[in-house]
Image (tube, rainbow, N blue to C red):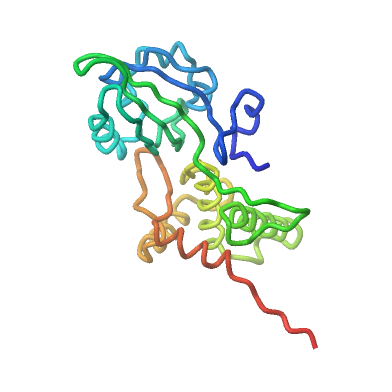
Length: 247
């Protein structure tokens, strides 16, 4: 079973629910000040429980998600139904971590608490027999992207990276794989992976932005993300099957 990114090493501590892993729970005041949080959640957020208790969730939420998240929380009714929120957190080392939170509000109108269950993003895992994986499922697309990256890296090692210059495709695959694994790539990480100068990478990212494939770079977080158009077009490519005629 595929388990995204660093959560693999925590599997023995986690609960699997359908196609998601439940990392743990948190309790906060209505204002969003954390009162209690499970250890595995703190670890994913790259902090200790002691560091997180007493902090406001807004202090560790991606700035681009704060207004939307506050509106979703404000719409919760006391002791009513829960709501599912997909949000980005800022980890202790500055990494952008995307999780899903099922939030309920308990208590009276003027008081009470918010109870959250945090989990990884849903990943549609197929029923796999042997090595056969449907290519157009999220799992199949992720695996094909990983395989393509692996072939490109082996090619560069065996034949020499100086013979090839398909940096754009490598950038798109790197960012796609990261997002499929609930991570967000940074400019610095891509520079290191492709052995490019930052200036060269930024030129390519500008080209990709002009084609509406990459979002504007968040310079504060150094984050690189695909647009919805970028995701759709990459997945269309990854789903493409070449017909081979044997005569």
